[in-house]
Length: 271
View (cartoon, rainbow, N blue to C red):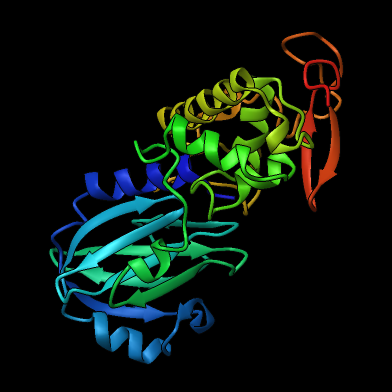
């Protein structure tokens, strides 16, 4: 579930807690399949003794830049998170210098850690990060105009724009009053501009509110402190099927669009 706002929140918290600049003294991999492309043993050997120089993010990818020149690329997938304290579902533990330990936990075991010589091997496959200047009105207009695709799958396509997932896609489409099945090239200039601004807005608000948690289950998003994201009070569409639209009062509906559940307002978001 973690999308751009959740990954950004975790990256900021890890930096604030002083993870950058610390040496990796020990690596314990409790779920070997999550480490790619090498074995868990090879991964541990390669990162041992290196320093985490920088923690950054592009789209949904978190990056630990190491003093060796290599980069650990981390994708949290459905339920990955970090903590400074040991827990039941810890899949990988980094023991760092100055008596700090970093625990990666993942109840669903879908997250992936990739050690790469050059992060561009992964980043070159992504479109521009949705909160950077590279994701511009001009870029978005051209991406929409030259494709004949349903709009929701298009904005979920990480090769088009990096960072959006199901939650914030529903939120952006609701805010822009665009039906998730509208064809991308059918939107006029005003609609494209409105949707572009909505994408930027919902993601920025999600970051401000430290991400979205919509329940209390073990698989739900938690930040480094184990706290739920504060954005749940701001959600207008995602997960609110059957509840009144906050704009017109009509009950929101849910449908499947490109194999993804999509909540929308049948009045405000006409096709």
